Image (cartoon, rainbow, N blue to C red; front, side, top):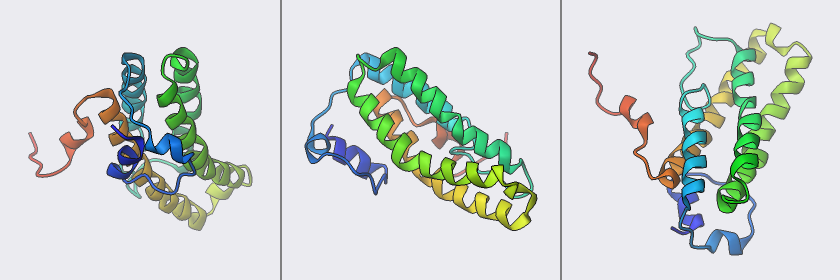
Length: 162
């Protein structure tokens, strides 16, 4: 797979990357597949990709869940990084260029008690919807790298309650 195609196929845009890296052919190694699987599971089981209804949850917990991707990713990088270099490069870029701006903005606001203001809570939820779209694409990319079915698709499309 070509890395640029992988990003484009999953709608991940607006990254600043070395052109040579983007054009690189990549055949994920078992360690990269395992790291991608582990991060994928974290993403699809959190508010990072799952809808947060206006009447559910709270803003601080949602922010904490998104922020938890930092220590989770760091641990994966430390345990697999040298054997999963291309995965590591992708994970670091997404973490620093997509997730960090969201968490930095809202951490600062949360310190200033923004979540006591209904309008700020609404603004966080709107920003959360934007980052969720990016992270849903990232989760799909990780499923591709892990060579697994996108399990999040089980709850999409025609649904039947059982």
